Length: 134
Image (cartoon, rainbow, N blue to C red; front, side, top):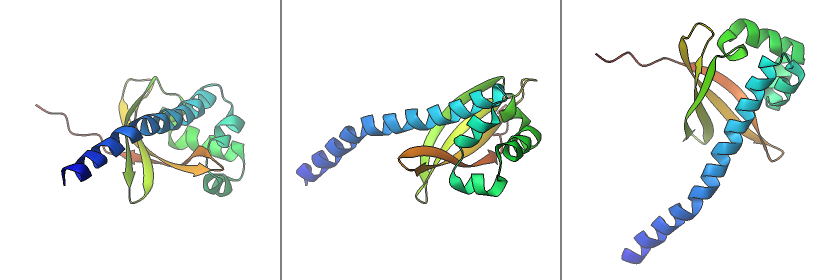
């Protein structure tokens, strides 16, 4: 029994560098897309979207208009902070805290998928901010 536990612990420890690398890769894709939005480079930003998202919007210009109008805090963030990366029902989600130009904070879950060996953004979902504690 003890050997099984030691094996499980050793397996988890061996996987930590891979998980850290995955988180770094995912965060790099999100950061690169935000940087592209800040540079008004919708073509590059569109390239970080999954094929599903690209099919829905059709062109980089349509995609850029949707983000600028629907998610202005992502289009022009003052700050972007990466929180937890988690697996839910076999899907990978990166929680991101975004601060808009006025200083208001927003939470989003970025759904990430692997396409041809590269991480791509498959959706961005607003998350309700926790109520302030007293």
